[in-house]
Length: 283
Image (cartoon, rainbow, N blue to C red):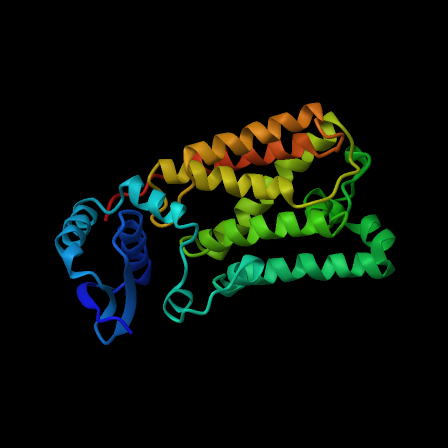
């Protein structure tokens, strides 16, 4: 075990993880240890102590600067403390699952449960009760839920895993900063607008969570730019690249039909949700 030098202690694991990522990006290797005073960042190379102090001072003077969330993005994750200090590396969906809150886990479990029901022969029954109404003007009041429930069904394992991975990653991070009621409202609004656009411009025969995922993606991007999120960040280049891929879907370059208007509707929903959200006052 290498001797470590303590350099700073935070009471909040998220702040400690952000600083740790920023140090790593600037070639200062470090570890987070837990003690009675909080979460302590330690470095092994004493020659980099002065450099580490300088970088930490930059953070303390302006902790909301986008470059710190950008550093966390480069490190590819904002892990919880257990994942960071145990040296037990989790990968893919397992890693996302471990750090997720109960809303993320419950909603993801529901998606998997419904897909299993589809596989074992209940798809016709589920589609009858959960699909978008063929004729919107004929929908009964008690069927209003069908405007959003197509998001709960998926066509195959690849369809499910792609959406589930993005959902766990995006909503799992967002759950660290937003209440469940907010997450539910954002998800329902994104599903509603995504499904209405898809049904209006193409067909009502669609399923999948991708419209909702696009809504969460665009919300995180704009809310981050407006400084309404402290620890969740989505870089411009990634957002615009994702948007370009969504637009590319309209020409079906690989002959694969996707719910393009649902994706557009989700993006718009997330942007509207973030735009009309009151700006947080700096603490």
